[in-house]
Image (cartoon, rainbow, N blue to C red; front, side, top):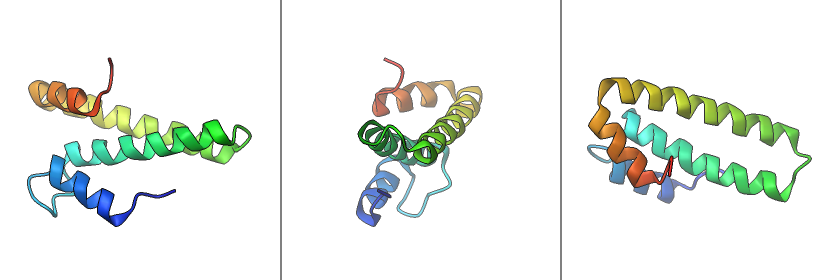
Length: 89
């Protein structure tokens, strides 16, 4: 259920400045978005798994806080990021 090394490396290369730029806000939000997608699919398949549901809500809250921070620091970068990730249609 966790992200594979290859998919994580691809996201880091796509959204980071270089291959080891994992602390970048863009990279963190992209990784959380992938994790949210996986947890959402899991929760749909197993609706009684309350631990996974709680974890999903926790990750959503973390991503929301990071996006709020990024919006306050770099509005144009924030807009580009949510467009690339397909958030907030």
